[in-house]
Image 1 (cartoon, chains in turn orange, red):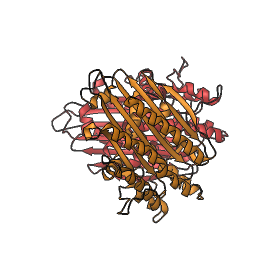
Image 2: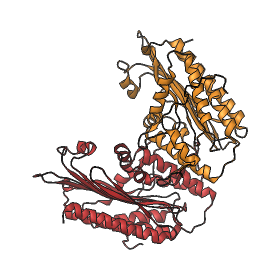
Image 3: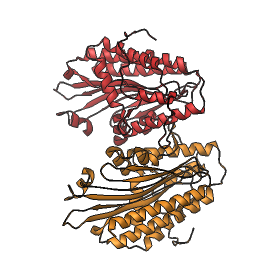
Image 4: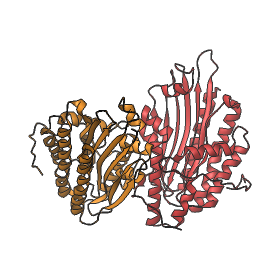
Length: 312
Length: 312
């Protein structure tokens, strides 16, 4: 089987498994599907759940596209690739829970290949996972980061500290001087150029996909039935406003999608069901909301505590 | 009095008058003020009303800033201006009404001057006004556009058709292939280069500010007490989602502000109090919401009907 087929199969299987798990946990609503074709070749499937018992809006998207010529924006980043055929596949998920105590979750894994007859194919993986809580539960943040550290420990090409720093940096809302959430890991180009090899990098991505549920589901189960009221929902709306600011102003995938067309609804699936803005809103000193603000700055979530792989 | 002082006085007076009129109409909430200083010189005052009887979120902002050196982004657009002192003043307003039948309203007027000893100063005006309804009231759209046409008629430098086309083009959400609302007029650089002169252009801007209330207030009075329910509020939320998409992805003033810093809360005052997103939402055929979609494409709102200046 070709590399592209192997990665595609992994991404597609990931979508099926994630959808099944989130649906089971939600208990009230089911994902519906929306397939799309790319005129130049390939397509994808968006799976969406809205108005669920646990998830207010959730999307798990899969795509696999190819074409005869690398798009200009990609070619610019990879000298010598212009005019060569390309292939790209990806899996992405965004979960916006109903209960403000349950953190929002985002992850995506992607694979690119630039080929051409008689040329050694160029390939790379990218991906990451990050958490966006509204409320400051230290144990949730620790659990999430420990799960990611445990994932990285098995793979010398994935240094948790480095990937965590890249994530902190990426998910910064620069005009606010704050992060969208509490980060996670982020890697942009895992490739032969990094001294990696395809088999090892594929194994890391496969384990990364498998790590998503144990990193996140325990937090959902722990918080989903906590009582909340209008105050917590308002705070969640304002934090979701920040989420929107990040995604529409900075997120590379979103901006790339908006510029190149594609399936707009699938691209903007990442946006929350609602968001809000209020002028210069500042939570009362000492409140849980004020304490949450300290979470949206880069921070060591391991604190020397040992990673426990089976924390979930 | 210097040019810069005359325009500043006009903008400041405009803020006072607009705030007074909107407050009076709202009847329930008052504008509060928030002054800010620019480290390089000058500053501004944001006036904000939130949670009013008519306006859910409204901002009327004034600023007048100056500095020893034109910011790089401006200098790039004006050859020979790098390193020269500059002055900029502006008045902007954004009104997000509570009642979904009342259209949102945006307008801004701005003046730039690039000086330097022994050099003829470069100056230009920019501005415009546009309307963003959720529901398709033909008479409201006509009233608004007629008021703007009447304004332009007095000023040969302001051709309504040309300014209307520029507005349709500017307020397009490109990734959706639709406009944010129903447009209005938009002009970017009214200057000596256009064959205009300062006195005439200042007179046009002064009349433009004076035209804002009669173009908009009649629509508010006509619609503010119409009964509405959850359905109309949902539709309003989704349309506000589009408003957010436009402002964060395309609006030049917003992006310029986010990139250069400045008062973030004043810059993002334009965002609605809430916005929402739902996957691939399409209103039922024949509904008022579906008919509204036809409004969000460029369209002739005059249809040969005569402009009536005193329509208000």
